[in-house]
Amino acid sequence: METALLSRKDQIDQTATALFRTRGFAATSMRELAAALGMEAGSIYSHIRSKEELLHRICFRLAEEFFAGFDEATADDALPAAPRLRRAVESHVRVLTTDSAASAVFLHEWRHLSEPARTEFLALRERYEAGFRELIAEGATAGELYAPDPAFAALTLLASLNWLPNWYRPGGPLAPTDIAHRLANQLLFGLEVRC
Amino acid sequence: METALLSRKDQIDQTATALFRTRGFAATSMRELAAALGMEAGSIYSHIRSKEELLHRICFRLAEEFFAGFDEATADDALPAAPRLRRAVESHVRVLTTDSAASAVFLHEWRHLSEPARTEFLALRERYEAGFRELIAEGATAGELYAPDPAFAALTLLASLNWLPNWYRPGGPLAPTDIAHRLANQLLFGLEVRC
DNA sequence: TACTAAGCCTAACGTTCGTTAGCAAAGAAA
DNA sequence: TTTCTTTGCTAACGAACGTTAGGCTTAGTA
Figure 1 (tube, rainbow over the protein chains, first blue to last red):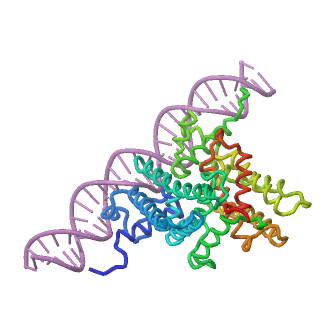
Figure 2: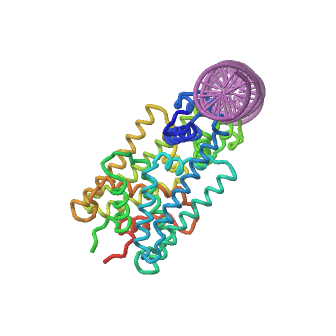
Figure 3: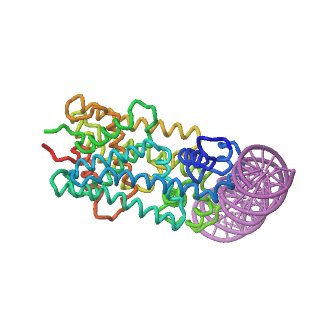
């Protein structure tokens, strides 16, 4: 057998991710996907069961990556909440930049999952957001952070980060780690000059 | 003629906006839209020319509202950049909250516009973002704001705001003006406690 | 050599899509 | 009364949709 860098199934996943990102899940046809892979639409079904399976795999794989990164970033209990939050932000940015196409699909196309996957996905997302919320709340009670409403702060913070796949392009002027540092700084220090 | 609160055409626009928001433009069929209006699919074409015309009207109407709000908020040249930025943020939030369904469509579904509308739309959006960018840059050179990279700051700021339609619900615990103030504060002052 | 398993093809299935044509009812304007 | 406009209907159009069945080719295995 040819030792391909990517198995055919992985190629399908990757091409589907790119198409779902730019055209959206619903507007991407199996024939389009097949054409991008240089094959016929029917042939794809030798590798997958359905179009939705593709979306399902993309969304849940990324959920796993976000969780793994967050857990690793916040594992050190000795650290105060503020630096742990900073590390969580950097981890989130790392996932967004290393797999920005899949991230965009994860963020925008999940609603085309049918039940029960959709509910399951939303539960995962809520649990992830709760992680940030609790980190911010911890920092607030410890006096490290100013956050009268941790839930509100967490929403705003993740919103800023999640916009990233909309403009980030690999090989641009800013490296992923630069972006992570800048975002963390801007979100933690704000725009207004310090007193 | 019956003096309806909304003309039939406006009812169609409004129902289409709600459906496009929750299911997406591509995944919303004309038959679904018709059913939600209590009519048949073919009948809609007595009022509109095409499905895309609906999307076009929603997107460009909101673009106008964003511009009108921004222009009014930043018209006072006597004011320093920082308070004008704050007013622009509040105006943006006002549009997002008073018409959150249309805002969500504006933010997510524009890519289903076909050319040349799509390019035209993106040019408008870029011009709007440039307004924020220049305001931040002005504040930075005047020493009012700390923003080493105004473009980056503008992206992050708008990202935080544009996430709003994803969680805002009219009649929730926070009134739109509260939200606007909190967002402006958090973005301008940051999360970290001040020195 | 014969057998097996991938991988892809063609052809077609039943369904749904956006849209159109032609007609009917009903009220406003003349 | 006649005419026109508005609004909606039914029925259908061609196209595109996701998916399946069955067969062919090729490469690895026994």
